[in-house]
Length: 363
Image (cartoon, rainbow, N blue to C red):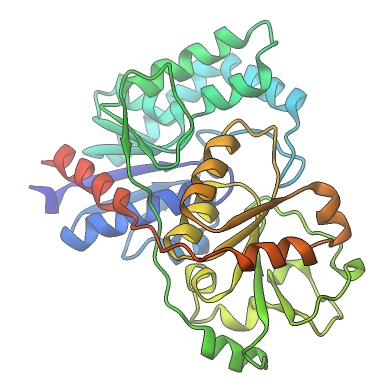
């Protein structure tokens, strides 16, 4: 009986995009089956998890993956990442024993991984049914960066074995190609839909209502541009994260005063432009909420070409470079972006598709 089932979610803490993919699916599943028990294993902060995943669930703090070692939101430390993978796989059996012990204690009926391969490997050894869900996988991200590493094949082998052990690897649009997966299944995009709170936001920020409101979010691994040195742009207001600190400019506001009852997706839906970097959560939520996107290039990230192509095809978007980011040279990019004919929102059909896969697996 589905209502008595226990779903265990292994969630990567490498940025917030994995949570943005997984939370809507879990919420859709529990709308239909509210009594399902849920355990979430992740190093993401518990308040962040509870802010996106509805209902009661148990949080288990534990990292089953690390993704890539980052300099900031845009740049990878390749040598450090390769060293970390070598160390991780050098302790593979001990790590696998640790993950198995966690799964034994939880005794779930099904595991969902986005996308720790260690968790999938442990589930396979314990004969726990498992699904994977993600727009990328770490084996192909590593291949994109470390193709010249002499031990790359040996590093990727256990990763691919684990990913292929899942009954299905769901790839929400837009996903990067995953040619070494035999169980890949394409589904539609996954995203939460926000509420248009613009009138209230203008009132609470003391805006006139005719400004171009730009929401700035560069992902879970923060990168703060030098806002103090940016030139002021006529009728543009920048809405920044609280942890970027105080900026003594009348055209810069913190979203801190809004977050008591206004979610991040509400902010995306309500602002004129989302200023961000390539990432699944930001791009999918912007397109599904019909919000324009100004983004700074991340050209070496192996997933970017597919993210950017889909964004440009389905949404209103413009790419800038690092020099423009540093200098705040954004007047012309914003003008061009705002002049694009508005495209309609895309339905996040992958949310229901992925929830249906989970439902069938729990029957």
